[in-house]
Image (cartoon, rainbow, N blue to C red; front, side, top):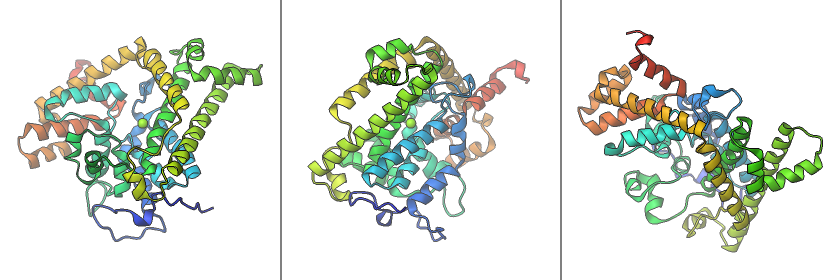
Length: 383
Ligand code: MG
């Protein structure tokens, strides 16, 4: 069935296009379908399988990785897009690309790399995701990067300070003039949040780091869990957890769709141009659900992300990233040849050297970073 897009959707045939004009067969695909396909075929996308979401990849095979997280964001995003008459392919392209710039070891890795890059312009995964698709993927004969459509690139850059935005070209402009991104980009941010809140609860419960009674006592999860228990009095813990999870995801999606619809019609938004010029993002949860989500996030912060076991792992991961960056920045001859070649074109500028080292470290999977650390520092790994 071909979906009829809403008038305020981002229509692929009105795209602001690609940086490098292309003449090649499209196979009947729209520009956003091609963007999604290019992301799926990229090297950075395959690496997401071995990058931490919250739990380090080797902790267990059942936990989310960056790859499964990105797929869940795409799934939630498509559900929302379809109900609002938005372009599902654009949502999926942004979803699958949104975490391509993540370092190994999740947020701990990013914090460490950002600290290492303090004097050299910092490191931010969201800007790095854009750098991956614009510069770092080398696959095509006519251009570097994936040459994605403007709207996909704009969606990947979900937040940005004004000072950085000034250096980001066309995709940074909206942060300077206070306009909004497409609704497809806006709902992908919510899909990201819906996905991680729910799967972090699921992984945290399974790992035994979150206490079910604490979770039920203080959050919306508890209200739904009790309903599920009444309906399935003989069900075991796994079924109760999943039945609660699916209802929670459904509730968040339905709330987002209804509130966004209300705001679109309340503001009389009919075109993409009006979406962009609206003083605030039209996509939103209701006040009530927005508050419940903030409460859940607070719970996760206190009970999961700051859990001593997660913290110990995060601190160790930070040391690995710090030391890798330090040794490679100090002696770039230790970098793989293809990274050294980039240094030769750029001379001895320490900013360029730091950026090349950051690109290399950020591109590592968890297990590659651990192996590279061991090769460079551990005498038991041979000399
Ligand atoms: Mg994400």
